[in-house]
Every structure is written in structure tokens, then in C-alpha cells.
Amino acid sequence: MVYYSLLSPPPLPSGKGGTFLWRKLGLWRRQRTRIESLFTSTVAIFYHGLRNSRLGLTPAPNIDYKKLATYIARGRTVTSVRWYVGILRNVNHTQSGQKLVSRQQRFLAGLAKDGYTVKPGRMMYRNGQPTEKGVDVKIAVDLITGAIDDHYDTAILFTSDSDLAPAVKTVQSRGKRVQNIAFWGATSIDLIKCCRAHRILSRSDIPNIVV
Image 1 (cartoon, rainbow, N blue to C red):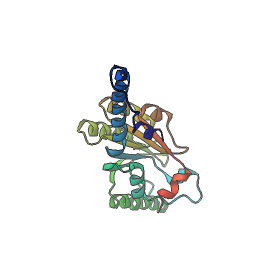
Image 2 (image 1 turned 45 degrees about the horizontal axis):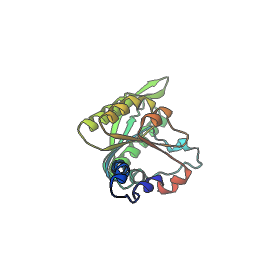
Image 3 (image 1 turned 90 degrees about the vertical axis):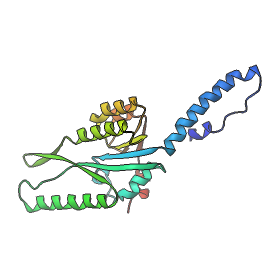
Image 4 (image 1 turned 180 degrees about the vertical axis):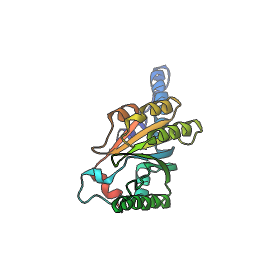
């Protein structure tokens, strides 16, 4: 990787002739500090809209979300892992609706057991179809509050919600880094452009994050 080429500076001549290269060395040291911090900093992970059924794989992979958090943190200290989701309700009082509610509750209980903080949002219904409301606002508030309170050095956004771009810019203007991670086919160009780093998980990553 290109990062490693920055970890060993070239030999520098002594005397006035080496002044320019010593300036280059100062630049190299600053670059190395920034790069090393990517792997030694604290991270907070924010999930939203992650659906393994959207990956186009049959059968859908059984993702181990504890493994996933560790995998994307890449050895950095994780200060928090948060899952943002609208909570389903059985508004039509049907058996199928109740099954969906129960399935979501079991899933969220499993996340909590694995150390996730579940951040519930509202679910609005129109013609029986659920739509999340206000979840992206919750993420934006937590993202900015975490930056102000120095809760993290790097925020990992596992989402393709482009509405978070303004919050990302605000956080990064305060010296924090934001990394956008998403699965293939579920990316946001707006987030990729405004985040300091991004990573698209491919099919080759799946074996590392399944049960």
C-alpha cells in the first residue's frame, strides 16, 4: 500500500544542500503522523440502513455484527458502536405484522448483547408501508455532539444516507475524521466525496464478517 512508502524517509545530506530535503522531512513527519493516527485513533461506529438482504447474494449471508465492528475498526480502539433504526409497530394488528415486530426485537436484542447501543427512531406508516422518520437527524446530532465532547477521533459511518453530508462537513471542520463504509451497490457519491476516507466492502470481505 502507498502508506508504507511514507514510513521510511530517504537519507538526507548534511549542510546547506540538505535544507530543502529537511523541509521535505518535516512534511513527511506530518504525513506519517496523520497516517499513523488512522490506525491508532479511537473510533465511534454509526450504522444505519444496513440490510444483508440487499447484497444480492442467495442465500443472504448471516452477518456476525460483532465481527463486522471489529473488522472495520482495523485494530483501532472503539469507543461506541451504535445502530440507528426505526422501530416497527403492528399497526394493522395482523399475524404477519406481529412476526415482523418480533423478528426485529430479537435482532436488536442480539445487537445489544454484542455491545451495540440501539438508537431507536420513529416509524411512520402510510397505506400500511413503514417509513423511517428522524433517524438521520439522530445520527447527525450524535455525530456532532460526539465531536464537540471529543468522544472519538474518527467516526465510521456505515450508511449510504447522503442527508448526513452537512453533518460530516461540520464534524470534519472541527478536526475530526469521518470514514464512510458501505457494501457494494449501496453507496452514496455525496458521502464518498465529503468524507476524508471511504471503503466499499466487496464479496471478498464477506467471509470475514459472517457467523
